[in-house]
Length: 257
Image (cartoon, rainbow, N blue to C red; front, side, top):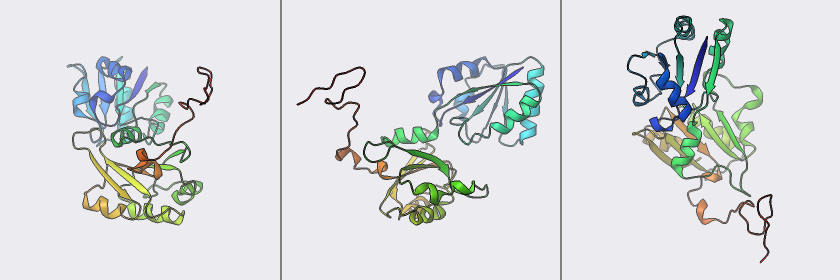
């Protein structure tokens, strides 16, 4: 009695893991978030697999459907966008499944935050600039814990990745500015990273809300903010110790000039 939760990756069907694709192809029943997961990926399920779209289902409907098929001895997979561990709402599914004595296996996926960094051609952790990435979201209809308000997190002045925040950019800008961020701070927005209709918006904190409005980006967008997103970062002399010829580590002895 087991359900496998698979991270589908950010969008492109070939960005699922090898293990995830293998299990998808073996499944008798596939439940997937049809508003977020590629149809092309789901088409790789075997021809006689039962495909259930879950965008219109509530939690109990999904879990009941999984339980019914598992009890019939079928291999059931639930396909989530990105990586299930980040804003995947998997805990509530796991709680109900475990109450029914159904085991849950999780297969990780490529998160949209890392897919966005890849299409932007950027490193989120730059030596001597920032060594921390905060993954969070702006507070909307769903509250965030008091100790995790964006204004307080932004005081670290590191790279910040904002999920689920494309409709809250006015609030985002205010929180960053209240935390002392410069209006010139680089911000990059990636709409539907790795999908055919992917769109990149390069902006600054000062112009973020207007640039997103002009480009019509109000959903399925990753917002990355901080000086690691500077388009001219490659022209600056930031270097890691890892490849410094004078730096000694376990696999190489440093050489002095």
